[in-house]
Image (cartoon, rainbow, N blue to C red; front, side, top):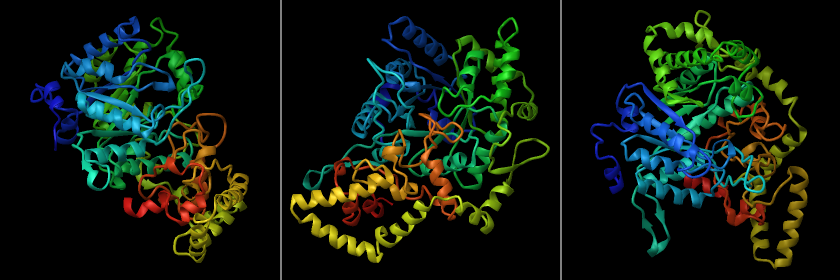
Length: 536
C-alpha cells in the first residue's frame, strides 16, 4: 500500500505509536477514542484555545488512542477539523477527521480528500451530515450532492488508484491511503426505521467502510443487537461503541428531539433530573453512568468506546479510573440497569430472558409479518398509486420488456427531432410526473429505487442510497413528514422485496442531466440505471 511522504513526516515515531488502523485490525486492544467538537472563530479565539488545550492534554494521555474531530456539527459553521488536527498530528496523535456532504459537492469533497491525504490525515469518518440550521445572514443552503455511501465509494476508488481523463490524456493517480469509517443508528423506535439502517450499514461496508461507530443510545439491548445482527449477516468489521456523557441540559435537549437521530426517553430524563438535584448536579452519577456504558461495550464485544460530551480533561480521566474499578463481570448488571427504550420499540431479535440483552432468535412477530398472511394484510395498506406504478414500470421501464423496447425507439426519434418537439415531449412528461410524484426534473430519476417516492422533492437531504440516521420516530429530522425511506420500506415489504431495497452499486446523480427528459435518459441508458451494469 502506498505511503505519502507527509505520512512519514508526521508519524516519525510510528513504531512507538501504533496507528488507529493497526490497533483495530491487527490487535485485540480495547480502544478509547474521544470526540472533539471544534469551535466558532479562529483557533486563537478563547474558545479555540480552550478546545486546542483540551485536545493537547488528551493527546498526551497514552490511554486515548484517537481523537475524532467534528465537521460543522449540528449544521453549524465551525472551524475545520484539520486546523486542530494538524497540531495533533505533530504530536503523533491518531486523528479521525469527520467529513460530511452537507456543505460540499463531490468535486469539493474530492479536493478535500487530496488535501487531507497530502497533510497526513488518513482516518476518515464519512457522514451524510446534519441539515444546516444556521448561517451568515440566514440559514445556509445544504448541498448533499452525494451521501455517506457515495463518499465511501469515491474515497475507496481513490484508495484503489483513480483514473482521470480519457483516451491518451487519461492517467491513474497515486493511491490514497484512507482508513474509512461510517456510522450506523439502530437506536430507532420502529421497524421501518431500524431495518433500513441495517441495510444501509451493509451498503456502507460494501462500499469501503472498514470500521463502524454507532450512534448515541442508552439501550444495552440495542447495543447488543447491532453486534449480533452484524455477526449473523457476515458484516465483519470492527465496531466502536458511542458513549455520550449526559448532563441535565443535554438530556433535556435530546429528550426534546433537538439533535437528529438521538433519543433520551422520558424514563431516562426522569433519572437524570432526580440525580441532578444533588450538590454536584448529578455529575458524579453521570460520569459513573458513562463508565458503566464503557464496561458494557467491552463486555458485549465492541472494539472500543467513543466518548463524547461537553467535558473537561479531568472528567475523561475520572471515567477511565472508574472503569478500572469495575469487576470483569459487572457489565452484565450494568446492562440490565442501562436499558432505556420505548415500550413498543422494535427489535430484530427476541430478548434473552435472563440478561435482558439480545438473543439470536429473530423476532417472531417480525417473521410472521413476512409470511403470506402478513404480506396480504400489508398490501391492503399500500396506496393504489404505488401498485399502478409497479405495473407501469415492469411493463414499460424495465429493461427487456416490450414497453422498454418501444420507449427506446420513441426516445431515439425524439432525440433526433427539432428542439420544439423535444421541448413539447419533455413538457408532456413533466405534466405527468409533477402531478404524480412532485418531480423536480433532475433528469436522473430515482423513483424506481425508492418505491416511486421522489428524493428531490420529498427528502431534504436527497438521500439516494438509503436513509440518513436523523429520523425521529419515523419522521424526517426537518418538519413532521414521514421519512421517504420508511415509507419505501413499508411499500416494498408488502411485496417481500424490502431486504434487497439497497442492493446494487452506490447511486450518484448525474448533474449534467438536470432539466432533461428522465424517460429518455432511462430508455437511452444515460442515467444511473444505465450505468449499474458497469459499476456492479
